[in-house]
Image (cartoon, rainbow, N blue to C red; front, top):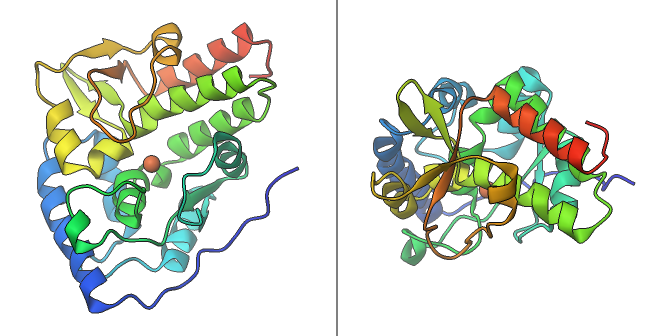
Length: 242
Ligand SMILES: [Fe+2]
């Protein structure tokens, strides 16, 4: 049964938090300029974010709803387990936290904070093709009957939407929201000497995601369409409905 949607509470943030948001946006906009994928750049302005004020979740949710039929729900300030996470996706809901890092966590915070969600992830959800791909992930994941299958789909998601690269012409551009919202790992991952491997199901599902340190290597997609091919192939292998 589907989890009930939990609306994102409206919070009256202190000025210090708005200042943290402003500083984070300021720095990160500069860092992503030459390395983010085109769909990030095309989608970002559609979010209509005010770089001086923490976004109002109801406004951003309504905007996404009008663009692609997706809405925001509260992630309740914790890591959702894979089942909860994909249950939201299949219902076209993107979970966001309302927590923003404290000033002393400016460079790194353990929990995904709202800067990570809004800046790192939501641009892609302004495009119908990414909204549909995310729903596709949810459809595959909710068919998982074993922990292994759930972990596989979670790793495929992770190595695309959190720390993935995608080919654009002769370049590899960043598509993953964890990289796009993390100054340290973004610069690390984009170094030419850090390996980027072609995305294959076998390699990716055998690779653990690193939540608290940088990854030693990353994966890249040939195209956006490849994501559907990956999910179809995985479903075929595991006798799931594509
Ligand atoms: Fe994330």
